[in-house]
Amino acid sequence: MKVPSRMKIIEDEMKSPKKPHPRKEVQDLFKYIKSQAKQATKRTGQFLKQMEKKEAKEAKREKLLQQIRDVDTQMNEELRNSRKFIDRQQLFAPCYMSGTKLGDTGPRKNALILLEQSDKQAAWIDETKDEVSKLLNGVIDAGETESINIATFSTSAITAWMPQFQLKTDPKKGLADALKWMNKNLSAKTCGAQPFPPDWSGMLNRFTGEGTQPPWRIYICCSRSPGMVNSDILALIKELRERCGEPAKGQPPLPINVVAFDPTIVGDNDEKAFFEELAGEHGKFMIDTSADDLVALDKMLKAVQVKKKQLDKLNKKLEKMEDLSERVNEDRSLLQVQIALQNMLQSDLEILDWALKNETQAPPPEI
Picture 1: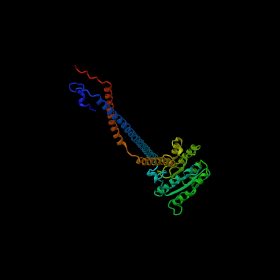
Picture 2 (picture 1 turned 90 degrees about the vertical axis):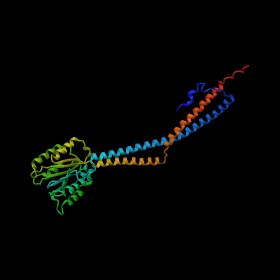
Picture 3 (picture 1 turned 180 degrees about the horizontal axis):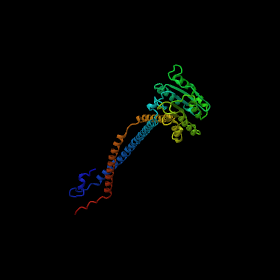
Picture 4 (picture 1 turned 30 degrees about the horizontal axis):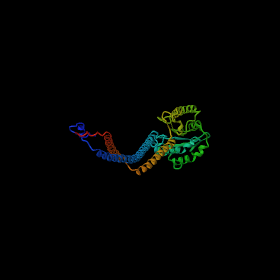
């Protein structure tokens, strides 16, 4: 604010001579300025009250905007976490969407598929069937494998689809019949009746004993390792590999591809060591946690859905609120002008009041 140019000469009596004013004139001016100051004070109060109402509405709107930003940030964070989870767990990896975790190649012949039948495995029947179906249709049928067999193993029995390896091209007992047999013999009901653990030793001896055609590669779907007899199983598979030897020149002895479905074994070093040794150098081991992963992903996406509904609700609420930000800024500037005018009138009133109380008596007439 610039000082008026005349203010610098007000103290100079030569440039700004002082002249007396009649008391009546000062009193009238005092009354007028007093009424103006009173009106200015009243107007300032009214103006301030109106501005505070607008500020309260705008503050409420700003709070709502902050809520929208927070919910939007949380929703995007949930989506990012979902994507990271999907990538980390490879839930929708193309190799597993159309392919199988049991492997992408098959032996030239004698592929043996073994399915655990126990109450523990009952929770992952659909996942097991899906992996075996993709193996048979996508790997065995499309590949060079000539013959297969499929069997279930439990604590009480080892049940095979066929007594020996069967040609996959057989018109009656081919791949289609193997899938039909699996769907009939592997169910939650048949698994629920069998306690854990199944008979791993009996299963291995059944298909590698004397007088049997040894498998060129074994595919196993199970819940987890049998536990107490792990060391016995590993000793047995080592003995069988030494005894059976290479099924053909350049072919590894008894390679095993294993998929375990129990998510509680993730991070268990003992389980990992057991299955890696069981699979052998030319085998493969994976843990399929897709069932639990999909449940976890569903919870994440439901959380995103809740945030989306909340965001839509807040946006609808925002649409009904008027944007007063510009008007509030304008009113604040006008309020400053109003207060300045009020202070000016109040200052003038104080000056007039002082003048009336400190009247200088006129000098007596000269005689």
